[in-house]
Image (cartoon, rainbow, N blue to C red; front, side, top):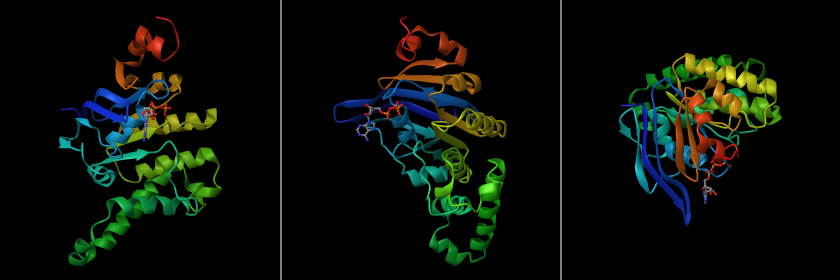
Length: 253
Ligand SMILES: Nc1ncnc2c1ncn2[C@@H]1O[C@H](COP(=O)(O)OP(=O)(O)OP(=O)(O)O)[C@@H](O)[C@H]1O
């Protein structure tokens, strides 16, 4: 069984079929990209995997658990975290506070366990702080740890958004256009971080419009068009596929 298995998802909004029978498998430790033209259904697919949308048909299994109807909060606790296309940070808080808050909101023990195991909250706090400091170090955010997120340049905020997801200690990271709007240098840094995550064994599912990056770093690529998977495989196979060239690159097959 693959770490993530998506079977035959259907999702529609009124008359619009955002996903029409989408299936996808991701093995532990893989870096899989999802590409496709605007409106192809990429973000909808990520929204289903992260529990923000619930498909009308189909199943989502992660490490054998059926997460099809789970809430975003439950999904985070199962080990899936997501960095958003539109940065979801508190601009009035520092980088450190944003990361700590993410862990508190999503991974906290309940009030009851805090009452019964009074040693636990303190140990948990120490663990939270250590995890967050490791992420700050990993994403090279030390110079900004006490800076208010609202005062940071856009490229750094994108990096903090990825760090926020990493702070949840996921086993699967979903990245929705983490390089959109970045300078070339910032993109190169982000590519380096993503490759380093993979080297450390993290599974990554990436939506990215920069085909050069996708072809360079992905183990496998899924191509969506009009809510369907039109091609899947190694980057070089997918790039040669005439349907992909026609749908995605605007080249006549
Ligand atoms: N909340 C929603 N309400 C209504 N329609 C939606 C909603 N979310 C997505 N859609 C529609 O579903 C289809 C797929 O959209 P989606 O955002 O998943 O595509 P995408 O491939 O991520 O596009 P982009 O590259 O532009 O981000 C589009 O036709 C979109 O208008």
